[in-house]
Amino acid sequence: MQIVRDLFGLFGILEFVYERIRNILIPPRAYSWQTLIYLSIFSWAMSSLSEPPIKSIIAFFGWVFLIAGTSWYTTDQPLLIPGTNMPVGSVITGFLVSVFAFGHEQDVLTTRTIVLWPTIAAIITAIPEFFEGSGIDVKRQLPKAEIRQRIIVLVACSFILSCWIQLYFTVDKWVRQYPSIQADDISRSTFVIRTEPQAKLPENGALILNRLQPRVEEQLTARVWSEVERWLIEAPQRVNNLGRDVIQNLSKQSGKKVDKFQPQIIEEWQLWNVDARVNNKKGGGYQLDLLTIWNGPSSSYKRYFLRKSCQVDPVSVAANSATVNIQKPGEKILVAEIQCEPTPKFFAGSPPAKQ
Image (cartoon, rainbow, N blue to C red; front, side, top):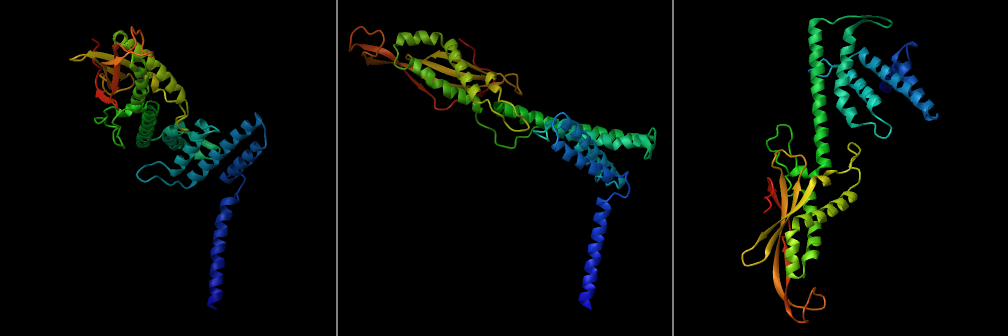
């Protein structure tokens, strides 16, 4: 007998589940939210079999039916978000409206979709308060003072939330387009928090100097000292020309997408300026400072720069066929020897003035 009771109990549970599913899937009448959902599914199926522009028109009505049906179902028995007067249904409907209005086939979730989602959900929550009645018997009304106050607070809070989300995407875009901005001092910021240890050097500024160094060494190493001195007199202009060529090559190599939210090329290369400073050393020789100066966004008007110092000294060697302007083979002449620091150094502030 116990087995029979268990079987009847199981049948009762299955019957209850069946009735619940049946009530959800089968519309009680033609004018219901289920009908709109089925129309949206039918529209999308038909649009997948169609060709433009008919495909876009059918898909448009599919979205309209889906949004209307979802809104209808979620407002029949509204469930409020804890601590607010916003129904969960408005959040779901707001997401669908945001995707429909601002998404596209390649990326359904775009930056604008996520940013405007809270504000659209708040507006959807507020709209029913300006109407009374149901079905086709609907009249416009002005909400009571306490309801208007609640609507204003809800919309304002949602708008602030959208602004904070937009701020996140804006800062993220800056960091991706201009990676060297991460070396800036943002410790006093009230809304930007560094989640990773601060980088010792701006990566791109250091890369420019490391690519520039071999080119400078090639033009100075083992050259006659008198020619090197003339080169150093024009060092700022010569180094700037070499630096522009390096930056142009690096810019071509970095022409790629970052990710689907920010599909933009890293554009900070053109915000680096290359310069040089030359100082006399006691006992002869020169100190050649290769500089990359950041002209992009910064928290301080002084900004910052990177420096790689090179020591250019005269050395006496025997002239040979490879030496320029030799007088006699084997004659002792002065040529340049250059040694540069292995890594650049970071400095906050403006670069030293030209002498």
